[in-house]
Length: 228
Image (cartoon, rainbow, N blue to C red):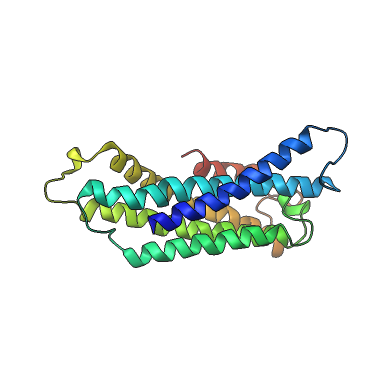
C-alpha cells in the first residue's frame, strides 16, 4: 500500500506540476489570456493546482507512502495494525482524486482557489463543479482519518517488546504526532466544508452575510486544520 500511495502521489504531483507550468506561462504574458478564454478557467486551474499538490501529492507520499513503509520497520512490526483499513484509505484517496479531476470538466470549473473562501465559493460559483470538488475533499478527509487512526494504533500496539515509547525513532514520533493532529483537525475542516455545502444547496446562512452569517467563521475553521 505504501508503494501504491507513492505512485498515486507521483501522478497527482505530475498533474499539479503541469498546471504550475501553465500558470507561470499564463503570468508571463499579462494583459491577455494565453491558454484560457476567461478568468474563471484560470482560477479553476489555480484551485486544482493547490488541491492536487497538498491533498494528493504531499500527504499521500509523505504520510501514506513513507509512513506505511517505514513505520512498521522502525517499530519491529510485521505489518500495520489494520491492513484492510489501510487499503480502504488508499482507495478513498483514489476516488477523491478522480472526483477532483472530474470537477474541472463540469461547467466552468471550481474557480474559488484551493482555500474555497466564501462569499466567492457561495455566491460566485453557482455551478455544481465546486460541489463535486468539495465532496472529493470530504472523501480524502475520510481517507486521512482512517490512515491517521491506523498509524496511531500501530505505534501504540504493534511495537516490538524491545521498542519502548522513549526509544522510538524521531520519524515514528513525528508520524504519530502528525496523525494525532489530523484526527483532531480534519473533522473541523469537514464541518466547515459541510456548512459550505449547506449554504450552497440548502439556503442556510453560516457564511452568507446577507442572512446574518459570517464568512470569517469559515477561515477560522479552515485554518484550524490548515496550520497543523
